[in-house]
Image (cartoon, rainbow, N blue to C red; front, side, top):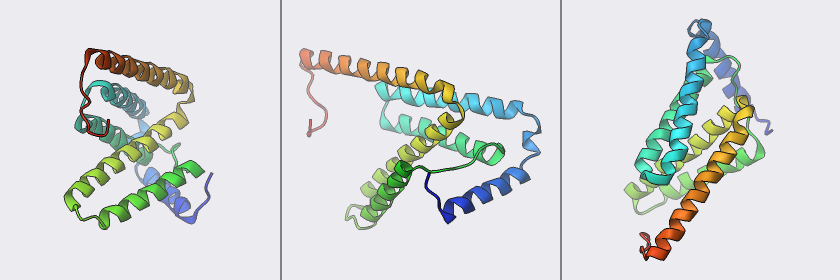
Length: 170
């Protein structure tokens, strides 16, 4: 785990908000339902990668991020801690921001940066969910493996059928 004054301050701020919003959590059913909605949107996001466009995937991922943020604010058991790999992703994100600022194609760069922010936010939300639901890790590994296998089979069938690649780099 990466120790940092910034992360300590963020967790202290989270505890402050969690204490102030504790009246919402008196009825624990609301938090249980929030977990179910996060699970539902994670499943929808993972399944949509097979057939949906990036805008729909991003919308589902934004729902996961928003619900996770709400859960962080409401649930007193929740906190943030970062591993070394997470810190490396934050440095990558910093490079993406610097690259966007120095780009000559501003609108396309900001669009790409927004997608990067959403996908990295989804990663952090997914890890936050799995941190408190360790019994579902195997389920998600199997689900993602099955979806990757399905996508691979679809790709092989398309290649045999003579479907041309949509991107010029393929």
